[in-house]
Length: 247
Image 1 (cartoon, rainbow, N blue to C red):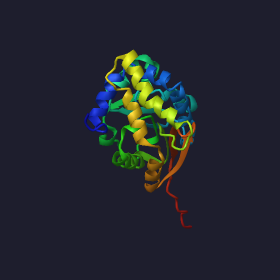
Image 2: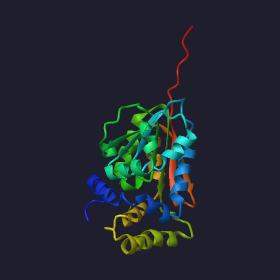
Image 3: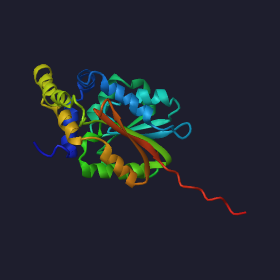
Image 4: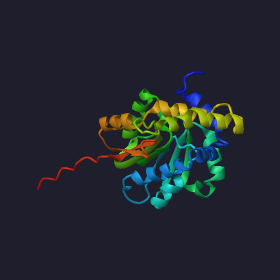
């Protein structure tokens, strides 16, 4: 196996499992992924005004969009950025055809994308952080600080390693043993879904990326969900103070 954080490796994994990703994720997380997406949206500070435009980074199947558009029904547009065209294609075919006029897709490595500075009122990301290593997280933090408008908001969530929780051994057993077993026996896959467990335990939690975002001057709140089985960061890019004009 090569570098599991190499963009082309990540793309190949998610392209191969895109057909069954939605069902597998929902069933094997016992519905928690859907709950956590909803909580990620709820954690996002209020959007600045109507017609907001923003990015869903590592957008995958776009399963967060219904929650986002329910809470903020006046969102003007969502630009989904993902390295896997397979994931997005399946998302639009199966879930989001009626939202197509509000969704733009960019197939690209997020960290190599040329997103314009101060172009986003919001940034959201669900379950994509684990596919980056620490150096890539630092680049993502810089990207977020660059693309958000002053006053713009963000929220991101990721499955995490619940260190300190007394049921952690069972959680890790589920990720590292049960999920690969399900894939081998029922899905006859190429161990792609098993990578989810590897990425999640390697990721740890979102505390490190929270610190990176704060270093770029962003206002950040770090949150644990369900005993730390998921962690998230949410906040805003602080608008500069406007000096009162001299009389």
